[in-house]
Length: 498
Image (cartoon, rainbow, N blue to C red; front, side):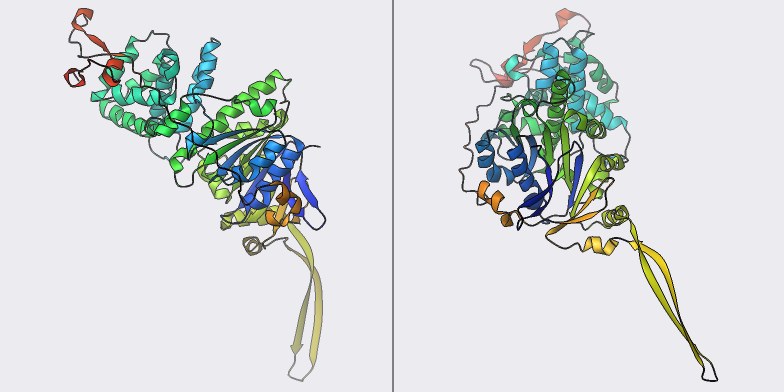
Protein backbone atom coordinates (compact mmCIF):
# COMPACT_ATOMS: atom_id res chain seq x y z
CA UNK A 1 0.00 0.00 0.00
CA UNK A 2 1.55 3.34 -1.01
CA UNK A 3 1.89 5.91 1.72
CA UNK A 4 0.22 9.27 1.44
CA UNK A 5 -0.09 12.73 2.90
CA UNK A 6 -3.22 12.95 5.05
CA UNK A 7 -5.53 15.71 3.81
CA UNK A 8 -8.67 14.79 5.74
CA UNK A 9 -9.95 12.34 8.36
CA UNK A 10 -13.34 11.07 9.50
CA UNK A 11 -12.87 9.25 12.83
CA UNK A 12 -16.53 8.17 12.98
CA UNK A 13 -16.08 6.07 9.83
CA UNK A 14 -12.34 5.43 10.35
CA UNK A 15 -11.74 7.06 6.98
CA UNK A 16 -8.64 8.88 5.75
CA UNK A 17 -8.24 10.94 2.62
CA UNK A 18 -4.65 10.85 1.37
CA UNK A 19 -2.51 11.99 -1.55
CA UNK A 20 -0.42 8.99 -2.59
CA UNK A 21 1.03 9.98 -5.98
CA UNK A 22 4.46 11.51 -6.69
CA UNK A 23 3.36 15.12 -6.26
CA UNK A 24 4.11 17.77 -3.68
CA UNK A 25 1.88 19.37 -1.04
CA UNK A 26 1.61 22.95 0.22
CA UNK A 27 0.18 23.13 3.74
CA UNK A 28 -1.01 26.59 4.82
CA UNK A 29 -1.81 27.29 8.44
CA UNK A 30 -1.02 30.12 10.80
CA UNK A 31 0.58 29.60 14.20
CA UNK A 32 -1.50 27.39 16.52
CA UNK A 33 -3.86 26.40 13.70
CA UNK A 34 -2.93 22.72 14.05
CA UNK A 35 -0.65 21.97 11.10
CA UNK A 36 1.34 19.43 13.11
CA UNK A 37 -1.50 17.77 15.04
CA UNK A 38 -4.01 17.67 12.19
CA UNK A 39 -1.79 16.86 9.19
CA UNK A 40 1.87 16.09 9.93
CA UNK A 41 1.45 13.67 12.86
CA UNK A 42 -1.30 11.62 11.13
CA UNK A 43 0.88 11.63 8.00
CA UNK A 44 3.88 10.25 9.91
CA UNK A 45 1.61 7.54 11.31
CA UNK A 46 0.27 6.62 7.86
CA UNK A 47 3.67 6.68 6.14
CA UNK A 48 5.06 4.40 8.86
CA UNK A 49 2.29 1.89 8.13
CA UNK A 50 3.33 2.00 4.47
CA UNK A 51 7.08 1.73 5.04
CA UNK A 52 8.10 4.99 3.37
CA UNK A 53 11.02 7.06 4.62
CA UNK A 54 10.71 10.56 6.07
CA UNK A 55 12.95 13.57 6.65
CA UNK A 56 11.10 15.77 9.13
CA UNK A 57 11.62 19.32 10.36
CA UNK A 58 10.68 19.11 14.02
CA UNK A 59 10.17 22.52 15.56
CA UNK A 60 10.62 22.47 19.34
CA UNK A 61 11.16 18.66 19.27
CA UNK A 62 7.49 17.76 19.63
CA UNK A 63 7.19 15.25 16.78
CA UNK A 64 10.16 13.08 17.75
CA UNK A 65 9.05 12.03 21.27
CA UNK A 66 5.47 11.43 20.11
CA UNK A 67 6.24 9.25 17.08
CA UNK A 68 9.58 7.52 17.79
CA UNK A 69 8.05 4.54 19.65
CA UNK A 70 5.66 3.80 16.80
CA UNK A 71 8.41 4.20 14.20
CA UNK A 72 10.72 1.79 16.03
CA UNK A 73 7.87 -0.70 16.31
CA UNK A 74 7.48 -0.51 12.54
CA UNK A 75 11.18 -1.30 12.08
CA UNK A 76 12.44 2.18 11.29
CA UNK A 77 15.99 3.41 11.65
CA UNK A 78 15.73 6.75 13.48
CA UNK A 79 18.30 9.49 12.94
CA UNK A 80 18.06 12.65 15.03
CA UNK A 81 19.95 15.86 14.32
CA UNK A 82 19.17 17.90 17.41
CA UNK A 83 20.21 21.50 16.82
CA UNK A 84 18.95 22.51 20.27
CA UNK A 85 20.89 19.96 22.36
CA UNK A 86 23.29 18.44 19.81
CA UNK A 87 24.85 15.91 22.19
CA UNK A 88 21.54 14.00 22.46
CA UNK A 89 21.42 13.04 18.79
CA UNK A 90 23.47 11.90 15.83
CA UNK A 91 26.56 13.53 14.37
CA UNK A 92 26.87 15.11 10.94
CA UNK A 93 29.99 16.47 9.25
CA UNK A 94 29.00 19.12 6.73
CA UNK A 95 32.24 18.55 4.80
CA UNK A 96 31.51 14.85 4.21
CA UNK A 97 30.28 15.32 0.60
CA UNK A 98 33.36 17.43 -0.17
CA UNK A 99 35.67 14.82 1.35
CA UNK A 100 34.00 11.95 -0.51
CA UNK A 101 34.33 13.78 -3.83
CA UNK A 102 38.02 14.45 -3.17
CA UNK A 103 38.54 10.80 -2.24
CA UNK A 104 37.09 9.87 -5.65
CA UNK A 105 39.48 12.36 -7.34
CA UNK A 106 36.45 14.37 -8.45
CA UNK A 107 37.70 17.87 -7.71
CA UNK A 108 34.94 19.54 -9.73
CA UNK A 109 32.25 17.87 -7.61
CA UNK A 110 34.11 18.78 -4.41
CA UNK A 111 34.19 22.43 -5.49
CA UNK A 112 30.47 22.26 -6.25
CA UNK A 113 29.65 20.84 -2.80
CA UNK A 114 31.82 23.49 -1.12
CA UNK A 115 30.08 26.16 -3.18
CA UNK A 116 26.66 24.86 -2.08
CA UNK A 117 27.63 25.14 1.59
CA UNK A 118 29.08 28.61 1.07
CA UNK A 119 26.00 29.76 -0.84
CA UNK A 120 23.61 28.64 1.89
CA UNK A 121 25.69 30.42 4.54
CA UNK A 122 26.10 33.62 2.50
CA UNK A 123 22.78 34.07 0.70
CA UNK A 124 20.37 36.60 2.19
CA UNK A 125 17.20 37.20 0.14
CA UNK A 126 16.58 40.46 1.99
CA UNK A 127 19.93 41.95 0.96
CA UNK A 128 19.55 44.76 -1.58
CA UNK A 129 23.07 46.21 -1.57
CA UNK A 130 26.07 45.72 -3.83
CA UNK A 131 26.05 42.06 -5.00
CA UNK A 132 29.84 41.93 -4.76
CA UNK A 133 29.56 41.72 -0.96
CA UNK A 134 27.71 38.36 -0.67
CA UNK A 135 29.60 37.03 -3.70
CA UNK A 136 32.96 37.75 -2.08
CA UNK A 137 31.79 36.34 1.24
CA UNK A 138 30.72 33.18 -0.56
CA UNK A 139 34.09 32.92 -2.32
CA UNK A 140 36.00 33.29 0.97
CA UNK A 141 33.86 30.66 2.68
CA UNK A 142 34.30 28.25 -0.23
CA UNK A 143 38.08 28.78 -0.23
CA UNK A 144 38.32 28.08 3.50
CA UNK A 145 36.23 24.90 3.16
CA UNK A 146 38.35 23.57 0.30
CA UNK A 147 41.57 24.41 2.13
CA UNK A 148 40.48 22.51 5.23
CA UNK A 149 39.12 19.58 3.21
CA UNK A 150 42.40 19.14 1.34
CA UNK A 151 45.09 20.23 3.81
CA UNK A 152 43.89 19.51 7.36
CA UNK A 153 44.62 16.17 9.05
CA UNK A 154 41.72 13.70 8.94
CA UNK A 155 40.35 14.36 12.47
CA UNK A 156 40.23 18.10 11.77
CA UNK A 157 38.38 18.11 8.44
CA UNK A 158 35.23 19.84 9.66
CA UNK A 159 33.63 23.29 9.85
CA UNK A 160 35.12 24.00 13.28
CA UNK A 161 38.54 24.11 11.63
CA UNK A 162 37.15 26.40 8.93
CA UNK A 163 36.19 28.86 11.66
CA UNK A 164 39.58 28.57 13.38
CA UNK A 165 41.45 29.11 10.12
CA UNK A 166 39.77 32.46 9.53
CA UNK A 167 39.65 33.48 13.19
CA UNK A 168 43.40 33.11 13.78
CA UNK A 169 44.98 33.68 10.37
CA UNK A 170 42.62 36.50 9.49
CA UNK A 171 43.89 38.79 12.23
CA UNK A 172 46.13 41.77 11.57
CA UNK A 173 44.67 42.52 8.17
CA UNK A 174 44.76 38.90 7.06
CA UNK A 175 48.43 38.87 6.03
CA UNK A 176 48.95 35.39 7.46
CA UNK A 177 45.84 34.19 5.60
CA UNK A 178 47.16 35.64 2.34
CA UNK A 179 50.50 33.94 2.89
CA UNK A 180 48.89 30.59 3.61
CA UNK A 181 46.82 30.58 0.43
CA UNK A 182 49.70 31.81 -1.74
CA UNK A 183 51.71 28.80 -0.50
CA UNK A 184 49.14 26.46 -2.04
CA UNK A 185 49.87 25.15 -5.57
CA UNK A 186 48.43 27.18 -8.43
CA UNK A 187 46.08 24.36 -9.37
CA UNK A 188 44.75 23.98 -5.83
CA UNK A 189 40.92 24.21 -5.76
CA UNK A 190 41.00 26.74 -2.90
CA UNK A 191 43.17 29.28 -4.70
CA UNK A 192 40.72 30.59 -7.28
CA UNK A 193 37.88 31.42 -4.86
CA UNK A 194 40.35 33.00 -2.45
CA UNK A 195 41.70 35.19 -5.26
CA UNK A 196 38.24 36.72 -5.60
CA UNK A 197 38.33 37.72 -1.94
CA UNK A 198 41.96 38.84 -2.20
CA UNK A 199 41.20 41.31 -4.99
CA UNK A 200 38.79 43.36 -2.87
CA UNK A 201 40.07 46.62 -1.37
CA UNK A 202 41.58 46.54 2.13
CA UNK A 203 38.68 48.20 3.95
CA UNK A 204 36.17 45.96 2.23
CA UNK A 205 38.31 42.87 2.85
CA UNK A 206 38.30 43.50 6.57
CA UNK A 207 34.53 43.96 6.69
CA UNK A 208 33.83 40.87 4.57
CA UNK A 209 36.20 38.76 6.66
CA UNK A 210 34.49 39.93 9.86
CA UNK A 211 31.05 39.25 8.40
CA UNK A 212 32.13 35.78 7.29
CA UNK A 213 33.62 35.03 10.69
CA UNK A 214 30.37 36.10 12.35
CA UNK A 215 28.49 33.60 10.18
CA UNK A 216 31.00 30.83 10.84
CA UNK A 217 30.99 31.34 14.60
CA UNK A 218 28.05 28.92 14.77
CA UNK A 219 30.53 26.16 13.95
CA UNK A 220 33.39 27.26 16.17
CA UNK A 221 32.04 28.81 19.37
CA UNK A 222 29.34 26.47 20.70
CA UNK A 223 31.09 23.32 22.02
CA UNK A 224 28.02 21.13 21.44
CA UNK A 225 27.73 22.18 17.79
CA UNK A 226 31.49 21.71 17.27
CA UNK A 227 31.17 18.18 18.66
CA UNK A 228 28.21 17.36 16.43
CA UNK A 229 29.83 18.55 13.17
CA UNK A 230 33.27 17.04 13.83
CA UNK A 231 32.22 13.54 12.75
CA UNK A 232 29.60 11.64 10.75
CA UNK A 233 27.75 8.58 12.05
CA UNK A 234 25.12 7.95 9.35
CA UNK A 235 24.62 7.76 5.61
CA UNK A 236 22.94 10.81 4.09
CA UNK A 237 21.22 8.54 1.57
CA UNK A 238 20.02 6.06 4.21
CA UNK A 239 16.40 7.20 3.79
CA UNK A 240 16.44 5.99 0.18
CA UNK A 241 17.88 2.56 1.02
CA UNK A 242 15.94 1.44 4.09
CA UNK A 243 12.97 2.54 6.18
CA UNK A 244 14.38 5.63 7.88
CA UNK A 245 13.01 8.62 9.77
CA UNK A 246 15.31 11.62 10.08
CA UNK A 247 14.30 14.31 12.58
CA UNK A 248 15.80 17.79 12.24
CA UNK A 249 15.11 19.38 15.63
CA UNK A 250 14.98 23.14 15.12
CA UNK A 251 15.00 25.39 18.21
CA UNK A 252 12.50 28.22 17.94
CA UNK A 253 14.50 30.34 20.40
CA UNK A 254 17.79 30.17 18.41
CA UNK A 255 17.01 31.05 14.82
CA UNK A 256 20.70 31.27 13.89
CA UNK A 257 20.76 27.45 13.89
CA UNK A 258 17.97 27.16 11.32
CA UNK A 259 20.56 27.31 8.55
CA UNK A 260 21.73 23.85 9.65
CA UNK A 261 18.36 22.43 8.58
CA UNK A 262 18.73 24.01 5.13
CA UNK A 263 22.22 22.57 4.77
CA UNK A 264 21.08 19.07 5.77
CA UNK A 265 18.14 19.16 3.35
CA UNK A 266 20.50 20.28 0.57
CA UNK A 267 23.08 17.58 1.26
CA UNK A 268 20.63 14.74 1.87
CA UNK A 269 18.77 15.59 -1.34
CA UNK A 270 22.01 15.48 -3.35
CA UNK A 271 22.88 12.10 -1.81
CA UNK A 272 19.40 10.76 -2.62
CA UNK A 273 19.67 11.94 -6.23
CA UNK A 274 22.99 10.10 -6.59
CA UNK A 275 21.36 6.97 -5.18
CA UNK A 276 18.41 7.31 -7.56
CA UNK A 277 20.78 7.66 -10.52
CA UNK A 278 22.42 4.37 -9.47
CA UNK A 279 18.97 2.72 -9.34
CA UNK A 280 17.60 3.47 -12.82
CA UNK A 281 16.50 6.97 -11.87
CA UNK A 282 14.28 6.17 -8.88
CA UNK A 283 14.89 5.50 -5.19
CA UNK A 284 14.30 1.98 -3.85
CA UNK A 285 12.15 3.52 -1.10
CA UNK A 286 10.16 6.73 -1.56
CA UNK A 287 11.32 9.59 0.66
CA UNK A 288 8.99 12.26 2.05
CA UNK A 289 10.36 15.62 3.18
CA UNK A 290 7.87 16.87 5.79
CA UNK A 291 9.13 20.42 6.24
CA UNK A 292 7.16 21.97 9.08
CA UNK A 293 7.71 25.74 9.38
CA UNK A 294 9.33 25.76 5.95
CA UNK A 295 8.91 29.52 5.90
CA UNK A 296 11.36 29.90 8.81
CA UNK A 297 14.17 27.89 7.19
CA UNK A 298 16.79 29.84 5.20
CA UNK A 299 16.59 29.41 1.45
CA UNK A 300 17.75 26.05 0.07
CA UNK A 301 20.01 26.43 -3.00
CA UNK A 302 18.28 25.67 -6.32
CA UNK A 303 15.11 24.60 -4.55
CA UNK A 304 12.91 25.36 -7.55
CA UNK A 305 14.93 22.86 -9.59
CA UNK A 306 14.76 20.29 -6.80
CA UNK A 307 10.99 20.46 -6.37
CA UNK A 308 10.50 20.35 -10.15
CA UNK A 309 12.47 17.13 -10.67
CA UNK A 310 12.08 15.36 -7.31
CA UNK A 311 8.79 13.54 -7.93
CA UNK A 312 10.10 11.35 -10.71
CA UNK A 313 12.93 10.19 -8.47
CA UNK A 314 10.60 9.13 -5.68
CA UNK A 315 11.05 12.22 -3.51
CA UNK A 316 8.06 14.24 -2.26
CA UNK A 317 7.98 17.58 -0.47
CA UNK A 318 5.33 18.77 1.96
CA UNK A 319 5.91 22.46 2.65
CA UNK A 320 4.17 23.88 5.73
CA UNK A 321 3.98 27.69 5.75
CA UNK A 322 1.91 30.37 7.45
CA UNK A 323 1.26 32.20 4.18
CA UNK A 324 2.64 32.66 0.70
CA UNK A 325 4.41 35.80 1.92
CA UNK A 326 6.96 33.51 3.60
CA UNK A 327 7.74 31.87 0.26
CA UNK A 328 8.12 35.27 -1.38
CA UNK A 329 10.50 36.37 1.38
CA UNK A 330 12.91 33.44 1.07
CA UNK A 331 12.46 32.73 -2.65
CA UNK A 332 11.79 36.11 -4.30
CA UNK A 333 10.55 35.85 -7.91
CA UNK A 334 10.47 32.05 -7.55
CA UNK A 335 7.54 31.55 -5.21
CA UNK A 336 5.13 31.01 -8.11
CA UNK A 337 7.25 28.15 -9.43
CA UNK A 338 7.29 26.50 -6.01
CA UNK A 339 3.53 26.91 -5.55
CA UNK A 340 2.90 25.65 -9.07
CA UNK A 341 4.78 22.43 -8.38
CA UNK A 342 2.56 21.73 -5.35
CA UNK A 343 -0.41 19.96 -6.92
CA UNK A 344 -2.23 19.75 -3.60
CA UNK A 345 -2.92 22.68 -1.29
CA UNK A 346 -4.23 22.05 2.23
CA UNK A 347 -5.60 25.23 3.72
CA UNK A 348 -6.33 25.46 7.45
CA UNK A 349 -6.08 29.17 8.32
CA UNK A 350 -4.09 32.30 7.51
CA UNK A 351 -3.88 35.92 8.56
CA UNK A 352 -2.21 37.03 5.33
CA UNK A 353 -4.66 38.87 3.08
CA UNK A 354 -2.76 38.11 -0.13
CA UNK A 355 -2.84 34.42 0.68
CA UNK A 356 -6.60 34.62 1.26
CA UNK A 357 -7.08 36.44 -2.06
CA UNK A 358 -5.07 33.81 -3.94
CA UNK A 359 -6.97 30.90 -2.39
CA UNK A 360 -10.29 32.57 -3.16
CA UNK A 361 -9.15 33.03 -6.75
CA UNK A 362 -7.99 29.40 -7.04
CA UNK A 363 -11.38 28.16 -5.83
CA UNK A 364 -12.97 29.82 -8.85
CA UNK A 365 -16.51 31.16 -9.31
CA UNK A 366 -19.94 29.63 -9.52
CA UNK A 367 -23.14 30.86 -11.15
CA UNK A 368 -26.11 31.98 -9.10
CA UNK A 369 -29.60 33.01 -10.15
CA UNK A 370 -30.69 36.54 -9.27
CA UNK A 371 -34.05 38.27 -9.12
CA UNK A 372 -34.49 42.03 -9.23
CA UNK A 373 -37.80 43.53 -8.04
CA UNK A 374 -38.92 46.97 -9.21
CA UNK A 375 -42.02 49.05 -8.63
CA UNK A 376 -43.17 52.54 -9.60
CA UNK A 377 -46.09 54.78 -8.67
CA UNK A 378 -47.69 57.53 -10.76
CA UNK A 379 -49.45 60.75 -9.71
CA UNK A 380 -52.77 59.18 -10.69
CA UNK A 381 -52.19 56.48 -8.13
CA UNK A 382 -51.48 53.75 -10.61
CA UNK A 383 -48.67 51.36 -9.68
CA UNK A 384 -46.57 49.01 -11.74
CA UNK A 385 -44.35 46.22 -10.53
CA UNK A 386 -41.91 43.89 -12.25
CA UNK A 387 -39.45 41.08 -11.63
CA UNK A 388 -36.25 40.64 -13.62
CA UNK A 389 -34.44 37.32 -13.47
CA UNK A 390 -30.82 36.80 -14.43
CA UNK A 391 -27.59 34.92 -13.83
CA UNK A 392 -24.37 36.19 -12.25
CA UNK A 393 -21.19 34.74 -10.79
CA UNK A 394 -19.54 35.05 -7.42
CA UNK A 395 -16.41 33.49 -5.87
CA UNK A 396 -17.00 30.01 -4.52
CA UNK A 397 -15.23 31.13 -1.35
CA UNK A 398 -14.99 34.84 -0.63
CA UNK A 399 -11.76 36.32 0.70
CA UNK A 400 -13.30 37.09 4.08
CA UNK A 401 -14.64 33.53 4.25
CA UNK A 402 -11.11 32.24 3.71
CA UNK A 403 -9.84 34.39 6.57
CA UNK A 404 -12.63 33.05 8.82
CA UNK A 405 -12.27 29.41 7.82
CA UNK A 406 -13.91 27.18 10.46
CA UNK A 407 -11.91 24.95 12.77
CA UNK A 408 -11.79 21.15 12.30
CA UNK A 409 -11.99 21.34 8.53
CA UNK A 410 -9.61 21.90 5.63
CA UNK A 411 -10.04 23.48 2.23
CA UNK A 412 -8.27 21.19 -0.24
CA UNK A 413 -7.27 22.43 -3.68
CA UNK A 414 -6.09 19.76 -6.08
CA UNK A 415 -4.83 20.36 -9.62
CA UNK A 416 -7.47 19.41 -12.23
CA UNK A 417 -10.09 18.74 -9.55
CA UNK A 418 -12.80 20.81 -7.91
CA UNK A 419 -12.11 22.33 -4.46
CA UNK A 420 -13.17 20.19 -1.52
CA UNK A 421 -13.93 20.82 2.12
CA UNK A 422 -12.82 17.86 4.24
CA UNK A 423 -13.06 17.21 7.98
CA UNK A 424 -9.69 17.62 9.71
CA UNK A 425 -10.04 17.04 13.46
CA UNK A 426 -7.26 17.15 16.04
CA UNK A 427 -5.17 14.00 16.36
CA UNK A 428 -6.61 13.36 19.83
CA UNK A 429 -9.92 12.48 18.13
CA UNK A 430 -8.38 9.72 15.98
CA UNK A 431 -8.55 6.53 18.10
CA UNK A 432 -6.32 4.35 15.92
CA UNK A 433 -3.61 6.99 15.71
CA UNK A 434 -3.78 7.80 19.42
CA UNK A 435 -3.33 4.13 20.32
CA UNK A 436 -0.06 3.96 18.34
CA UNK A 437 1.50 7.33 19.14
CA UNK A 438 2.76 8.61 22.49
CA UNK A 439 0.84 11.88 22.71
CA UNK A 440 1.59 12.20 26.44
CA UNK A 441 5.33 11.79 25.83
CA UNK A 442 5.82 9.10 28.43
CA UNK A 443 9.03 7.79 26.86
CA UNK A 444 12.47 8.55 28.24
CA UNK A 445 14.31 11.48 26.65
CA UNK A 446 17.46 10.75 24.68
CA UNK A 447 20.51 10.65 26.98
CA UNK A 448 23.17 13.32 26.66
CA UNK A 449 26.56 12.15 25.41
CA UNK A 450 29.89 13.33 26.78
CA UNK A 451 31.36 16.09 24.63
CA UNK A 452 35.00 15.53 23.74
CA UNK A 453 36.13 18.38 21.54
CA UNK A 454 38.85 17.77 18.97
CA UNK A 455 42.00 19.79 19.54
CA UNK A 456 42.23 22.82 17.25
CA UNK A 457 44.50 22.63 14.24
CA UNK A 458 46.06 25.38 12.17
CA UNK A 459 48.71 25.22 9.41
CA UNK A 460 52.16 26.81 9.21
CA UNK A 461 52.31 30.61 8.99
CA UNK A 462 54.99 33.27 9.07
CA UNK A 463 55.99 34.79 12.40
CA UNK A 464 57.27 37.92 10.61
CA UNK A 465 56.19 39.60 7.42
CA UNK A 466 59.06 39.21 4.91
CA UNK A 467 60.70 42.42 3.69
CA UNK A 468 62.44 40.81 0.71
CA UNK A 469 61.44 37.91 -1.53
CA UNK A 470 64.32 35.90 -0.07
CA UNK A 471 63.26 32.73 1.69
CA UNK A 472 66.17 33.08 4.12
CA UNK A 473 64.62 36.19 5.61
CA UNK A 474 61.49 34.34 6.63
CA UNK A 475 60.87 32.22 9.64
CA UNK A 476 58.05 29.72 10.02
CA UNK A 477 56.51 28.18 13.08
CA UNK A 478 53.74 25.67 13.38
CA UNK A 479 50.51 27.27 14.53
CA UNK A 480 49.65 24.03 16.28
CA UNK A 481 52.40 24.86 18.76
CA UNK A 482 50.88 28.28 19.34
CA UNK A 483 47.24 27.41 19.86
CA UNK A 484 47.32 23.97 21.49
CA UNK A 485 48.46 23.30 25.00
CA UNK A 486 51.93 21.80 24.90
CA UNK A 487 54.62 21.77 27.52
CA UNK A 488 57.54 24.13 27.05
CA UNK A 489 55.68 26.55 24.78
CA UNK A 490 55.65 30.15 25.93
CA UNK A 491 52.74 31.63 23.98
CA UNK A 492 53.45 35.13 25.22
CA UNK A 493 56.94 35.11 23.68
CA UNK A 494 55.80 34.14 20.18
CA UNK A 495 56.11 37.03 17.71
CA UNK A 496 53.66 36.92 14.80
CA UNK A 497 55.01 40.22 13.49
CA UNK A 498 51.65 41.55 12.28
